[in-house]
Amino acid sequence: GAVVSQHPSRVICKSGTSVKIECRSLDFQATTMFWYRQFPKQSLMLMATSNEGSKATYEQGVEKDKFLINHASLTLSTLTVTSAHPEDSSFYICSARWGVGDTEAFFGQGTRLTVV
Amino acid sequence: KQEVTQIPAALSVPEGENLVLNCSFTDSAIYNLQWFSQDPGKGLTSLLLIQSSQREQTSGRLNASLDKSSGRSTLYIAASQPGDSATYLCAVSSTGGFKTIFGAGTRLFVKA
Image (cartoon, rainbow over all chains, first blue to last red; front, side):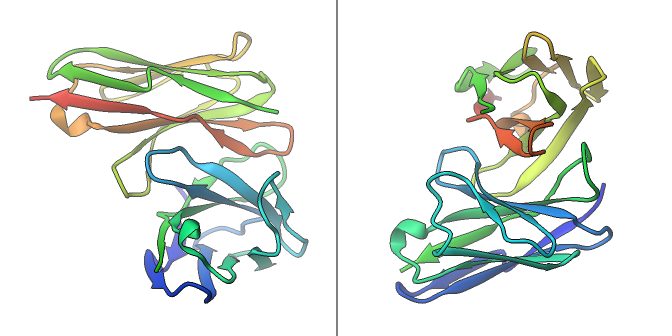
């Protein structure tokens, strides 16, 4: 299957700072990327959908000013958690699809964010 | 809005037992369904992908079925092993918005 790479795999940041997570499709052009958040012992919750060159579409309850998503190229999307707080500590996973329509989504290995 | 439910939430079985995990979804307008496993604190491992036109997929000791009209899928694990212990997630990709929505998962523990 296609490869989606996330970086960093783990990050610790101080409360009030911002942290950026990168999601790259290594061997295909990702027309659409998705960002998920997973709290301990819970499932993956979709945060937002981003299409290359367009503004991201956020799911209900997700603060777009806090979780900034940029999808400026067909191989890279970034999620920036701004003014992070301890309650933002979570596991963040991205996925990427190519083309338009019913194509398979491939998932990154996730980023463990800890805000202290 | 698509909702995905997995039953049971947790399961503990002795080694060697065959078992079935269940997944149901509310909107049958899907284009695929995927089963993943996840170890605590780790990423996802893709197990099986079933396209909406298919009824089942097999890989080794795993068999996944799909009944799109009734909104159900099952994951069958044969001859379970302690190494199969993980959380199993069902994920449904809908034609509306092409989003992938996950169930809450089934935590499986296989006792040696």
